[in-house]
Image 1 (cartoon, rainbow, N blue to C red):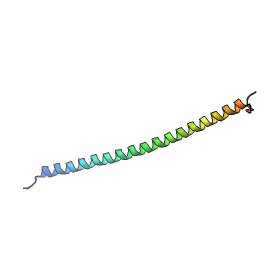
Image 2 (cartoon, rainbow, N blue to C red; image 1 turned 180 degrees about the horizontal axis):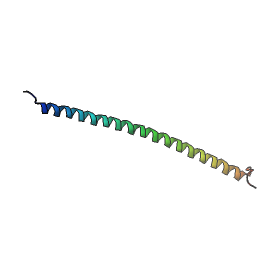
Image 3 (cartoon, one colour; image 1 turned 45 degrees about the horizontal axis):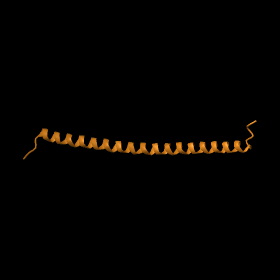
Image 4 (cartoon, one colour; image 1 turned 180 degrees about the vertical axis):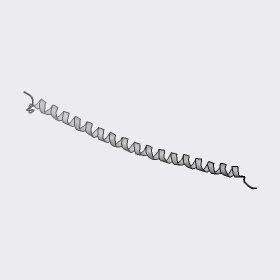
Length: 73
């Protein structure tokens, strides 16, 4: 059974579209994984900054409670 010219073109377009959709899927998956890594890094930085701020606040609170803080009159 011979395949006609239009059938060959349809088959070729099917492969082209399928390949394009798969390439889009792979690119989207890669972008999403990079986005997740960036969000995790930003979360770690924010958590570290919050911990540092809390430690500085607690240290200042302890100094002022013990009367050793020279910045108060």
